[in-house]
Image (cartoon, rainbow, N blue to C red; front, side):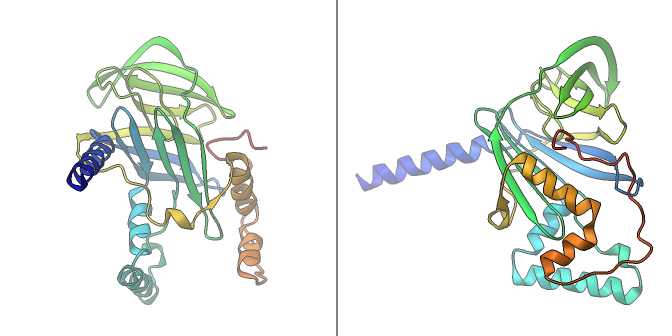
Length: 265
């Protein structure tokens, strides 16, 4: 009996691992603008199969991996020390795009995000956007793509998807079209994802390291908290540290700056 139970347990584990194995790895360039109005370009990764996906920034994942062990923390501290010593503070790796988005097509979507003062996570039922598919076409990375549009959480999105890759997923939370989304842009020009490469893979779709350290909340509360920090980061950081931070000649924020979702206002 014990052998049978052990065998069945191993079978269930094998099935679970297989289910979380990605079929493709898609690299995207994420063009966006910070609160000072400066253009930012960062690499994002989508690991996906027909049922599960993970969207993240590889530098963020690397830094998270360093901070999970004492040895990793030492490596990161040494990197920072070297940068300060050489006067190249900008060489310090940082979490410019700290979000993770996990989709389970028959379950939930889980989102993680953070700033230097707080770490948040929330879970909500997985749902796709309501798309209108047009007749417009173009080629991206050699794939024939079709245009589709949607309104989602305060923004109007135009995307291009390819039926040649029958995985109904895409960058960030965007999904649900009959093919992989290779490009997505919202109308204000603040946020734009463009696929730069696609490869086959057998990487595991694992949760982010340190996930248990994130405070559980809901989507709107998280966005409001992150925005409060962006509007006055020195005050928010000072409160979290229990100190007072005075800043002179602070750069004014760009009035058009906002997150991927704007329906929290």
